[in-house]
Amino acid sequence: MTHQLDGTDIKILRELQRNGRARRNKLAEIVGLSVPSVSERMKKLEEKNLIDGYYAVLDPRSFDIDITAFIFVQVDNSSFYADFVEAAKEEAEVLECHSITGDGSHFLKIRTRNTESLERLLSKIQTMPGVKKTRSNIVLSTFKETREIPLQEEVS
Amino acid sequence: MTHQLDGTDIKILRELQRNGRARRNKLAEIVGLSVPSVSERMKKLEEKNLIDGYYAVLDPRSFDIDITAFIFVQVDNSSFYADFVEAAKEEAEVLECHSITGDGSHFLKIRTRNTESLERLLSKIQTMPGVKKTRSNIVLSTFKETREIPLQEEVS
DNA sequence: CGTGAAATCCCACCGTA
DNA sequence: TACGGTGGGATTTCACG
Image (cartoon, rainbow over all chains, first blue to last red; front, side, top):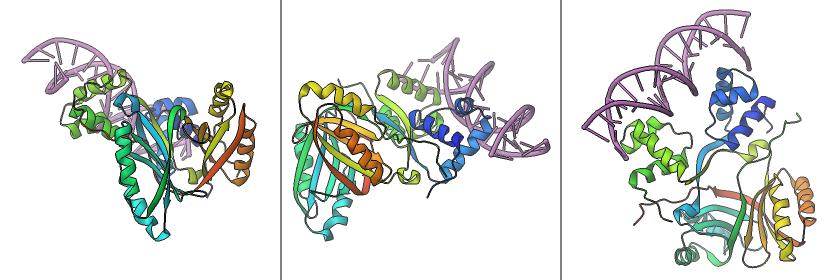
């Protein structure tokens, strides 16, 4: 599933990963092409669904959202998996939901306001379909947090 | 550290969290104000550093980046913490680095191409300053992955 | 695929309420 | 804070190499 991306496409994507609101004329300057060419390439990149979306990321502490936690969830019977995932997805404080190898069948990343709201959320998770037990790790400090993936010229 | 955000600001931020490239005229339409008013508000929101940044998020599978993993790292002596964190931050495949409560002192989220590159990365992590041992959980499926935080009108 | 040029659209800046 | 008007910049469209 490797795409036909040349160095110019890679450069555009790299810049957009760092600055999602980069103007087309600035991108054109970076890659050394005209503005219409950049627009054309951006359209194609989006049509290929290479770009999941453009998002503003807010600073959680500025909104008094002080707690980040990672939660292992053991969902008892695989027949509950789908229902559990649906319930977890609908929870706004659940930022990520994965199924994983190892101890616990599912893994959540959550963000919440304080210990009180954390307790409420944990209770809620524990009553979700099939949940047998949970184990939480609370974040003390965050040193890096990004979704930027490293891009290099494809060797096709 | 609660800010003076009214419902209009919240609506703007909500939309920008979902569509980071939303135009000011579209935002104006959503909140029922004129374009200059929205611009004014956006400027103030950015001046208050409520917005960490705007980012394009790429679809990792489209770039053959098939493995996501969460790694607990036990850094032996707290005197190594700073050096370990620096080393981890510089690794492009390390998307997140936190210090946490519970087993293991640090926690990483990583994305890499395949099992081979995962092995390389794990070896590298194990040689970082102070690293005593690691425990990995590989992601099988991802059902939700966002950095959108739930916003509601502040009760100030 | 690439471009320059024209039409259109968006936005920063102003004066004003 | 809010607004409308306006000039300049950004984006889209298009004819063409």
